[in-house]
Image (tube, rainbow, N blue to C red; front, top):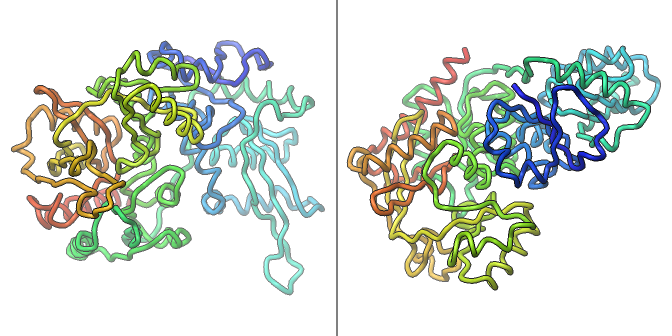
Length: 492
């Protein structure tokens, strides 16, 4: 497998490694040839990994292209959740205390380069931390704390894990970096942290105040009833219950998900603790960013509306390529929010300016008017339900959040048996869902002149009482939970 280092400024990158190519982040993100390269592993050494930065998008699109990035977006998100990385690294406590016991200071910072440090006594600790957080360059901070009040007994605590840029490495460390890089890139396998298993129970994550939750109160009760019939205990949890995840054996998320959000932290924490999860963190990553999803579907040869990824240097070409009207989408928008139809160059300029303030990249697609969108529910690679969602009254989308009339905020629906839906719509939906995983998905499609085009794949599709469950009834809840519980059995 070929290796590619993606950096901000290749001319300033002074780490030549035989057999490894170097390219700028700008080129990797914007030049079409990189999306077509097969059998490639990307090592992301950008200076900034923040959400929706260039470094973030390098890892995101590398995953969509099958380039197996190091670090992955999952790894990047882990560093944003202090409670998560502390819990994941709890099993390292004995090693931490042993490695740092001779230090007299109250604080200690460990620099880790591809799993190594200048001091050999910290080598095992560095390797374990790198296994948990597979970032090229890490800076890990520990502090000394009293074990209990009114005692002199002290223990070292992991306080912060931070990714650092190549430019921030001291010159005196570069020889070690070179040696560590040679060893690192010569490896044939890149291990991930092993999950841990815990006791059996089911948690359902909800937000009772959410305006457009993926399941209404009646559907949530249906899930609870189905779980009871399947001999599982049920606890409804909310965003404040992250610390309780280890109490459960499975997590069902029934709150709108996003990567930069507590729902992702719940999914990632649950996975790290060994729970079975719907929505799993990989599905959240793949579905909630429209730039990633468009690239993934295109690579998978799934029909999608004509579109382009817009950045600061190609923004002038949108009208010529897509025509007007066209649709602009913020990468992490949901429920039609952050999705704008622009009618001309003037509107395009205004809305792109606003979107670029939030994200380096924006997805633009051709406007494809239809009376309704299909939603095919998919579970474990098989169709679960089929719905038509009609456009809100007098609007071009299913949801019209600008409507003052609550009845006019969403359109009508029609639920039909899966076997009555057009075969090509169902087949296209299944093809799209297979690119995401084997979980629960809602594939949105437009049907135009006998062909289906995938608009979106939702990792957290609506299952509401008397809507999506209209055909299957209680069976739809049983199927979802049975699939979740099968994962528990496979782990045991």
